[in-house]
Image 1 (tube, rainbow, N blue to C red):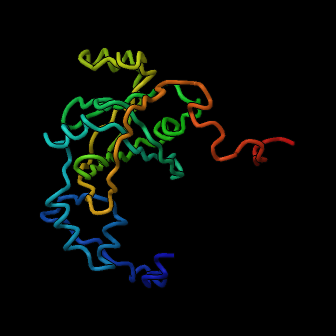
Image 2 (cartoon, rainbow, N blue to C red):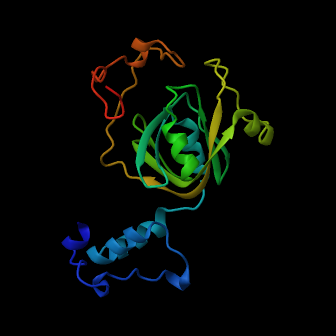
Length: 228
């Protein structure tokens, strides 16, 4: 356990204190990260990052970045903390920025599992990572609170919401995210990718082969929830 490694395991008095924020303000991030910053002596570097890079909204550069992204990595967890990480993708603009503190991404008909939405229904906390692998090799973290909104309801609230005519699909619903933190993901370990030329995506298909088939050879494996 990390507490044993750091020598926190014997007596509560050995757990490092979270340093107070300037003027009593609440620091960004979690209590856990502040405890580890104190234990590992990285608090000064962390505070510099908070002060220089962490915002509680999307600025103009971030809004522009979100508007040209074609994929997003979505992190959610249920009420007990069980985690799920998923991918959402679409043409630039599929993530709709509503204002500097709000954006939404569409949910289309999928495999019916609804893992991300199920987690959001129990726990509104969400993490979204957007990465430019092609041009600028940079990423954007956005952490916030998510809500599930039906397509008609979001369009009634925001009539100028774009319609996805390119793929002739209508979202069943949206995940509307209220921004709590937005900050850079540095480029030093982001690989450069080159988009494939002349290939079209089978957006919205239910054809098994186009979706990947049984790529990981999972069919036929006994599951603990299946009856003999």
